Each structure stands twice: as structure tokens, then as C-alpha cells.
Amino acid sequence: MGFDLGIFNDPLLQEDYIDWLVDEHAVDIQTHFAKLWEYYANRMEPGQGDGTGHELGRCYLQAQEYGLPARITGLVHSANAGVFGARRIGDVQRKEVVIENDIAWRINAAVDFLFGKPISFVSKSPDSQKHAEIESILKAVFAANGGIGFFQDMAVLGSIYGFVDCLVRPGDDIIEGISCSSQTLSFEDVLQLAQTIGLELIEAPRALPVLEEDDYKKIRYYVQHFYQKKNALSGKNSFLSRLLSQVRRSPALARRNSRQVVAVTEITSATGWQRYEDKQLVAEGELPWGFLPVVHIQNIAQPYYYEGLSDVEPLIPLQDELNTRLSDRASRITFQTFKMYLGKGIEGFEDRPISPGRMWYTDNPDAAIEEFGGDAATPSEDMHIAEIREAMDKTSGVTPVVAGVLKNKLGNLTSAVALRLTFMGMLSKTERKRFTYREGLKKIAQMVLDILDKADIYKIGGADREIDIIFPSPLPENMMEKLKEAQIKKELGVPTEQVLRELGYEAVKES
Image: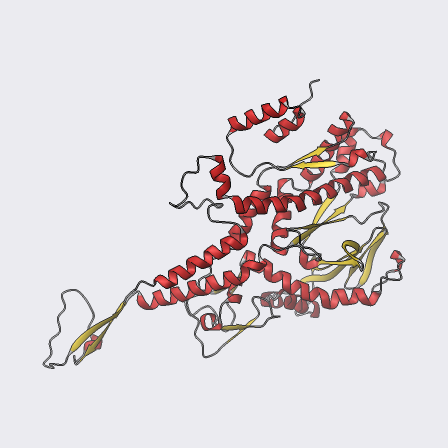
């Protein structure tokens, strides 16, 4: 077993380099990106068998406990052991653990601003008939791959990991009928074949791109490495299942490893592809398209790096600090909520309950009952927590107002200008993302058209490949103002079809 890369006919692509990518580099990036996902999802795991988490009646652990100090959780984490890979400290009792996931709702709010409403693909073909047909083809392809859900999944993966890759996979009918002539196909047949094109979003932990040595923006080979569950059973406690449990840091998987799991490696180039299972070649083939069918999209552009800027990574230290302070406050409140009493010089005081109307009698002149405990105001603690939340607002650009949490310091938001000023940080960040996602979606659309063209299913010219994408405004708008604006645009000569698209309508041709 091993990698046999002869189909690529490239002496610069070495088997030992692919081995290093799969065996060593993949483990490092999976550890890094898995932590970003866990901080977003804040997944729960059952408490460990040593009783972890049971002292306070909670039989579960949460992913964001990874960033809490050991004095609170009673656990010590290793940097490379994953969020749930921890060992217990015997002499430290687990305190009140409070996790407030301020990362997830910010990511979801940013996704809603970016792809909360349907987007439109506009063809710039000079031929009016092709113009309409190309838009219908693209609409059918994206609808077959999930529609708006596809775009939202793309934005979620990009926000968490900093980038998202899309692999364009033509259907078997397109590959088998690549020699067919377009004259034998009706436009309805073209739409049916176009819907067989798969758009597969690749999550960052499985992506191992081989970049050009002199240009980090160009992908030479695209390697994927991941573990796939089969619909078959395997022996318990197999080596591969234990290895998978270590990579995913899931002790439960090692205990319930009755399902067969294989390590899958896929290598794709502009000329061919291969698929390995446990480093054994199971399939390969040539690609007739003449280009690598992978589109790379950065969440926010970052120069000189393949990865873009993640929305989750800069929030992790602030999230850890917020959870630490909330947990400290919960422990303090637990200790101070109930008042306690210290009795001096009163016999049997410890056996007598505290209740209204009860009196104590003693001949000891030094006897006394002292009260302590009870909640007390801590303005510095409240101020510190508020400042952490403000720091997260600044870092993410997403304020509670975006999520609909209104407070009494907003002023008058009836004006559209005032509303835009309130959301200025969110709008500017969304506009930056729109640029990268718009360019990525254009490349996906152009690849789809190129595949149909090279397969002689739908022929297009060079000018027909130009695509534009219209993003609707994420803010609520006054419909009368939009109609007045549309009327002015039409008077200035803007095409009626484009004006209708900006209003959210589709132009219908009269028969």
C-alpha cells in the first residue's frame, strides 16, 4: 500500500510529500481548526467516568471549558489533546461553571447579514436569449445544491475557519455523455444535466492544498484527507478507530467503535484525480476540463496567506475571560446567597433551627450571634464583565443590536441614516466579505458554464462567461423609498430587468 502518483505525470509531486501531508501536517491543522469549530458549537460531552462534572449535579462538560482555569473546572488541559482531552486534578474541587457562548450568535448574525436574503446571478451575455438561459442554468445548479442553505453553510464555514473551498463535481451523466452534441439536447435536457453538477463545500480540517512555490494564490494540487464512516461493522478497539478517537478527541468513540471507519485521501489536479482508502488506491480518472475544479474563498482577505481571517479566532481569548468571570461570579453568589450565623456562648446553638420568632436564652454575658454572608454589590466585577462584552463587540463588529437586543440608549432609529450609523461596523464588515464571496461565487458559476461547454452540453462564448451577483440590502427598508429610487434609476437609463432584480422581482417575458 502507498501512494502511486503516476497518473499526474509530475516529477515535482513526490509520494513522501503526500505522506507528510497526510500523516503529520493533517494532524496539526485538524487540531487547530477543530478548536475553532468547538468554540463556535460549544458541544457537550457526558462527564468522564471519574465523576468529572457530577459534583454540582451536572453530568456533562462543554467545549468552551477548555479555556477555563483549573481552579474552576478541576481539570488541566494539554495544548494538543483537544478540548475534551483533560485530566483531573485530585485536590481541586470543581466550582460553578458558567458558559455563555457569545461567539455562536455573533457568527450567525453575521451570516444572516451576508446571506439572509436570496442573491441573484446576472448574466452579462450580449445575446438576450443566452442571457436568460445562463441565468436559468445557474439558478437550477445552485437550487439543486441547497439554494440559500448552500450559501449560508458556505458563510458559516468561512466565518469559523477563515476560508472555505468549493469542489465542483460534474455528475456521471455529464462525464458519460461528454461526446454528445449540443444539437441533440433541448434546453430542458440541459437544465436536467446541469442539476447533476455537485457543489461540495470542503471544511478546513480536511483541506491540504499544494500551492505553487512562487505564488501562494495558485493551487497546484488539491488534497483532502478525512475519516469516513462506512455502513459496515468492524472489530472493537481497532487501531484505526482508536486513532480516529485521538484525532477527534472523543473518548466515547473509542468505547463505541463498532462502525467501520476508513481514512480517505483524495488528490485532484487539473488533469486527473485519485481516491485512496487507508492509503490503498480505489479509484482514479482523468479530468477533461483543463482546470482544477476547486474555488477558494477567503472569509476576509488576508495578504500572503492561503487562509483568510477567521471571525472565531480573535474572540477566543475574550470568550475565555468572559466565561472565567461569569464562573467566578457564580461561585461567589453561591457562597453569599444564603446568610450564615455564628453563635458564641450559646449551648446547643448548632442544633437549633433559624426561624422567625425564635429566641435564645443563656446566662453567659459574652454570648452573641453574628450574621455574615449574603449577596453584596461588586461594581468593579460588573464593570469588568461589561467591558469584556464591549471588547467582543469591537472585535467582531457584531453588537447586540444586530441580534435584536434593544436597550434604552439607542435614540431615534426611525431615520434610515441613523439606522445605518448604528450598524456601521456590521455593514462595513459585511461589505468586505461580500467582495471575497462575490468573486468566489463568480468563479463557481464560470466553472459550471465551462464544464457544460467542454462537455458539448451548452456552448458559450467568451463574453457569455461574465457573471455579476446582486446582494440585497440586509437592513429593513422603506418600500416607498425603494420604489422612488427604482423609478429614478429607470429614468436614468438603467435596464428595467436590473431594476426589477434589485427590488426582488424577476422579469417575466410575455409570450
